[in-house]
Image (tube, rainbow, N blue to C red; front, side, top):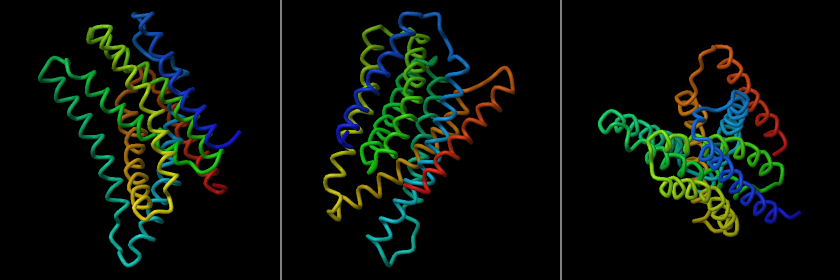
Length: 253
């Protein structure tokens, strides 16, 4: 299987998982939270994204900017990474502010924006992958996140009594973002030898690293509250395991 064919298959699989996990709460409207086992899987995926950010995307961005601006010592990559982190933080703070001012009517829309941006970026990260092992581990992480995020988004919209047509529209938009990101990432790899493409790739890697760090830390903590502290510790263990897996993979990739 060629890398391009593998990525195309991954895009289709991600789309189908997103639709399927959103369809379930629509059929079972009394379902309001994740099974605990699914949360452990998402914690492991968060660890993978955290590892991808620190062991792959941010170092790669630093390397590329070092080639573009050989005589500059300013931490460009770190600044862009922080920008991605702060953008996601701003969007979630905006969600909290809207909750207080408008009776939570805007919460599902702001959550949709956050998840759409993240889905597009994680898809592009898979799309620019250069090896099958690299894209395979990202696919596993995306599938684990995608299912829970699609489920949570649909449940949030049901809680706020959005019309079914609007729920279907927002869910479909979210489901399409990662496949679209994969396509954009593959287009980027076709022009990697141009100087402007190198700049674009370096910028994207740094910005994506910031969003991955946020989604794997503050966002994860905010949307996971447990009656039992042991569940939280199990999730932390799964997250650390995901980071360790990426640290080991970084030795070969």
